[in-house]
Length: 109
Image 1 (cartoon, rainbow, N blue to C red):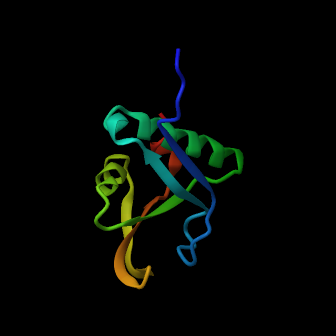
Image 2 (cartoon, rainbow, N blue to C red):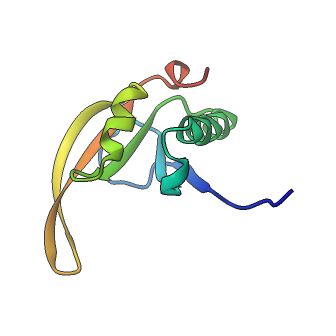
């Protein structure tokens, strides 16, 4: 059986400035395109939630580019939009959406 990495997720204590109602942050989540839509994202997200709970963290935010189709994934996972900000990447201004979960219990199922 051939094993390969098809995705990853990282998270931990909140690194983003502001949003003081949130203690944790999903830093990144990535899944190869051919494995998207197969519940891999949900499994990865739940692993981050499990980790945050070991840190006594029960709230989390994630920042995602507005044009990123993953926005729909976060909606489906119960995240609420809490802000929209403008950032600069490689000299270009882009919109970034901030989503959050006030209670991670809704995610861990």
